[in-house]
Image (cartoon, rainbow, N blue to C red; front, side, top):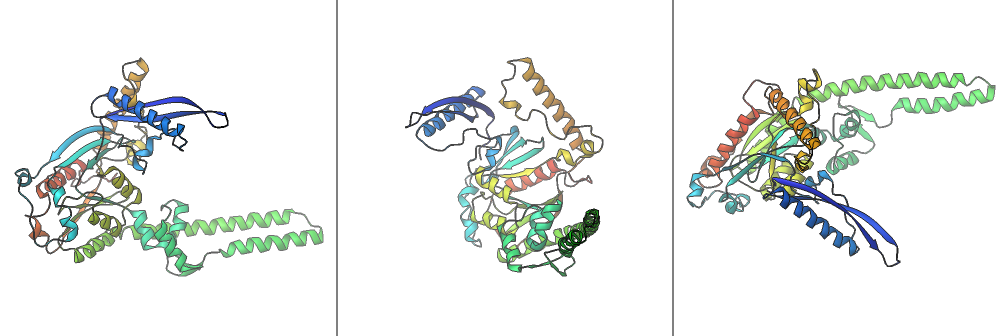
Amino acid sequence: MLIPRYWAVYKQRFDKVDAKQIKRQATIKRYGWSNISQEDALRHAKQRVTEAHQRWQAGEDIHRLERKELYNTELGIPIREQILLEQSFIDPALSQGIKSSAKNTTQQVKESTQLDKAPTQLIVTRNSYGAQVANINNIAIIDVDNDDLMAWLHPAESLFHSFIGVSKPFGEQQAAAMAVQGPEQKSWSGKSKSTINWRLWVFILGSIVIASIIVWQSLSWSWLMGFMMGMTGIWWYGEHKRTQQLMANYQERVNKLPEVMHNLIEQRLANYPEERFRLYQTPEGFRIIATHATLLPNDEAVKAWFEHFHADSNYVRLCHVQQCFRARLTAKPWRMDEVMVSQQLDKTIPTTDFWLLETGSDGQDNCLVKAREEWIKQYETFAKNYRACQFLLELSGDKAALNDAGIGNHKAIEDFVRWHDTACQVTLALPLA
């Protein structure tokens, strides 16, 4: 896990003459980072520009302008967010050099024994839209979206709901499931429904027939226009009613998702009785924290959890690239009434990259920093009225208690879970945001 404290950005224009004596130009921009100083971060940025220029001169195809969002891709740079807190959770037993030894463990947990000797590192950052986020190196947090669960449970409806805005476009697994179903799909009511709407056929064939009659009888084209407008109205009304019904059924199914997650955890524990999980509900999904052992994102057990619980693919990629787990601690601005209803606060945070500025060099930079600080002050005041997630239940396998003394940094996990629940205000009767 690498979350630098200092960041800088540097860009430079270069010329190159190719074999045909054709002059080419390129502007190369790179970010630099450091835990030492702003100057060291700028030096790193210049070094990365020089390295990219050398590869470009050698004929390599490079990304010339490094994008801000690259930290969650395979081309990833470290997480570029403002650091608010750094803390370690250390098990007293491990700090005294006591080695873990347990008999009833799976091979997946055995592979993590070396990791258990390392302290649990927590870094709290402020993300691009202003919320506080926990980044932790070895306590597994699994993020699951309602949309991904719905796409898995009801793949036939995934495509439709991606158009009406209640589901993300389905992935390869859901696309394959739809392909297996063939030309017939199941509607939300469970009845078989053709993929080609009958109103479309009436519209096409009717227009052809009326146009032919108009040409044959030399009639006014207003007849065709009237028919097309009428069919459009009928079509719109039918789709509007269908959308309303689908939305109602969608919400009904979303309300059943906590039971689905409960069953998924029990299925996992039936095969791996030494595991333990805490389940939370978020505004648009679920959060699972594994509390029986400390593991890294690339551990085989974690990979299996991501797949079994249908974790959000973007989150999985971020965990893999950055080698940490993340959990949002405070509300998303656009979910707060103060933003959407009373508009006491802007939806987006101003000057999100303020730490890249050389503050103090001119008055404008200082104004940008002050604007951001004022926004954050207001946001934190409103965010206290919301909770990021709600605790639902904790489930453990039959052998989880037997392994508590031998496997995992359990004191560190307990301390982190207690800290997490307090930071997210999970026990307070507040709206989810």
